[in-house]
Every structure is written in structure tokens, then in C-alpha cells.
Length: 273
Image 1 (cartoon, rainbow, N blue to C red):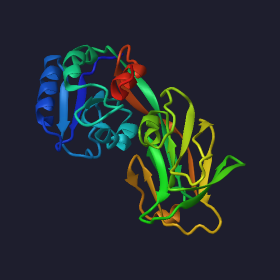
Image 2: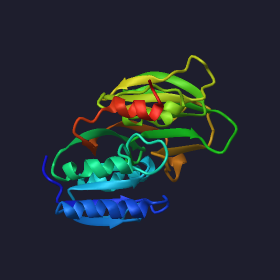
Image 3: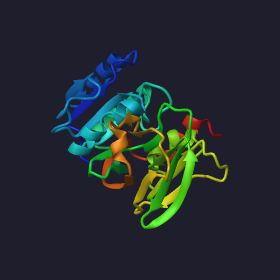
Image 4: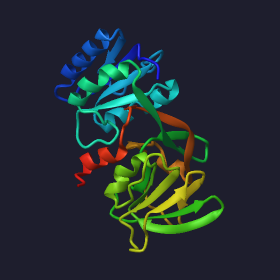
């Protein structure tokens, strides 16, 4: 891969010690002859990644997800330096970064193209998600009733608190907490996991990545719904049903060390033996 001569650093100012980590990375980058642009704004300002070779994000997965639209628009690979809670995208610790950064700056890295979901409403408005699209009942102690179709075929009607549509990357996020399966990030699939379904036989379903899924209210359902992509709630949710969820043609470029092991990350984060 080409050396990283122009890098960006985006840090979450709410994280204790973030400024010290930024200073350390800036010193390493400048020692390697790289030009550095840094920000503590979250989300980053429009155009922050313009002309950059890569971006290093200091924070948790949420900080990294906040750069999604800018990253996709500029096609700039991102490396996450973990300075938060449990994280599967921010795979470097601050200590790891000190050792890994010099060879990465010289071009010893890989870029994994992670799948994105696109959520589309009847008017054609779209929102991308790296982890998940979540449709759930909002502010009420009642179940939503949602009907799902895969292409021209009916899947089922669900009485539940909501539905999670997840990428393989997002399989270790809300999907995992709701009892869904862990999926390798290179798999070409879409996951659907009901949240607290009323029927015990309602389980996660794994769809082919080429499938277009449609979600609408079941007949008679009047539950107030919320729709969120990667935890960001969409406004005017009532006008957005039915929704179409599918794999986007766009991808999210994630910068990783050469020889990166997804299963090593899982072992470390989930305390597997």
C-alpha cells in the first residue's frame, strides 16, 4: 500500500487523556514526514478528510461511526484507536498504536471494505448504516407489529419491541445483545433479529446480501415507531414507513494492520478462551 503522507486525526474531547494521545500520534506522524490535520469536533466538520490519505480516530466505536458520511464521501480509510468502552471497530489500543503506527505510515497496512446498509423511505430519502438499522416502538409499553418481506416474498409478521437489521460488522453490536449471531465481516449477508419477540419461535434470520427487505406496519398496528441508523434516530419517522433496507453499493474503508485477525479481536473483547 502507499505511504500515508497526509493524515487526519479526529478525537473525542470527552474522553480523558484524548489530547495526550493526539499529541503522541502527531509526533510519530511528523517524525515519519507525514502532514497532520487534527480536530476535537464531533462530528467532524464537512471537508475535514479532503485530500487525506487516512484518518486515525481516538475514541470508541461511536466516535468512529460519527465520521461515516465524511469517510464514505471522501473514500478515506479509517483506523480506530480505542479510548472508550468495548469496541470492535476501534481495534488499536493507545499502546498498540505507538508500535503499529510507524510501519503503517510507511505503507504496511491493509484496507478492509466493510459493507453498509442503506435505509430508504417511500420518498427516496436514504441513510447509511455501518452497524445497523433499528425499528422499534417509541416511548410506549406496547409491542409493535411489523411485517417483513424479502423481495416479492412475505417473511413473517412480528409482534415485538422492534427489529434490528444488521451488517456483519454490526453483528457484534445491538444484534449480539439481542441474541443474534456473530458473523464474519467478509460475509455477504444481512441479519434480522427481533427485539423481545412475543413468540418464542421468532428468531434471527440471515438473508443473502443481494436481498431487498421491506418493512411496514402489520394491519391494524398504530404503535408510535422510531427508526435509527447506527444509533442516530431519523426525524419524522411516521412518514418513513414502509422502509426498504438493503446492502449499499458504497462501502466503509477500515484501515487495519497487516495480518489483522478478526477472531483475535473477538477473543480479546469477549474473553473467549
